[in-house]
Image 1 (cartoon, one colour):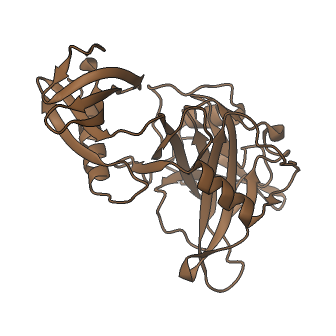
Image 2 (cartoon, rainbow, N blue to C red):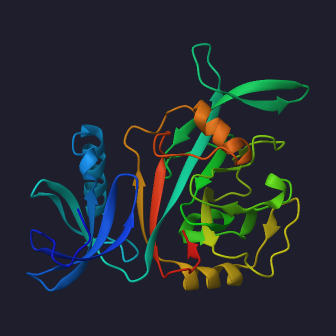
Image 3 (cartoon, one colour):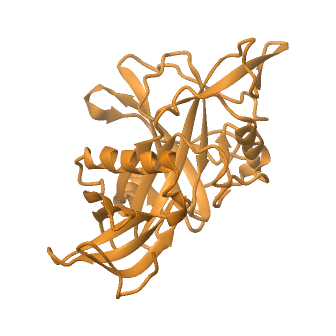
Length: 310
């Protein structure tokens, strides 16, 4: 599908290209019947014979259309027209970025496991554990050991904030858990294909253990920020840094965009692969479209070159 004001897709008049991805392209278009500007996402022609990619595309549309929230982009229409698979979404001025996250729960390695393991220091011994994917909204148990991996298609600087969650929608103090100088020597630069693991594989410990700090806590809230330049005023050290609630609230009000979340169908429960291990080791191995996909996608609509907060 070429970019041209002469092109139409059913009732949609294509205006301009907004961007390309591994599966398709996104265009700004106008619904001639409703005089509504929309974003049209279409599958690349070379994927039409790939039943799995068509299924993933349809699942993405159905999952997003079932959600109703002011911070979630509205899906107006999807289907197949004139031999082209498409999705019509709410158009937001600026750019749409994907934040890619996988949460890993460590389980004891089994004799039949063939994939890579992560070595955990337990006393004087190194014990092998296998990281296993979990969905972002999964229920985790106290004592679970977890790791986080993040990829951003936007070049910039990554910050991760953790807050304890209590009943009554209350949250605890915000802690900046990444970057720290003991993880990747404080290097928090991100770019497409670069996988950031928190904690890093060579950190000690190289996992987080879930514990309730006080009665009434039932979860953890992770906040991810990617900015095009380092956030000023943050002095990074070897340990997590306590931030002020007012500072984080200000970032959220200023940088939060309309957000959609998608989970990979059948991805939860999959074990760590050799490719993911190598990509997360030191950041020199870049992920490509042919490598295993992530578990959770957050699609965030923000103004061009604005930091974004998910």
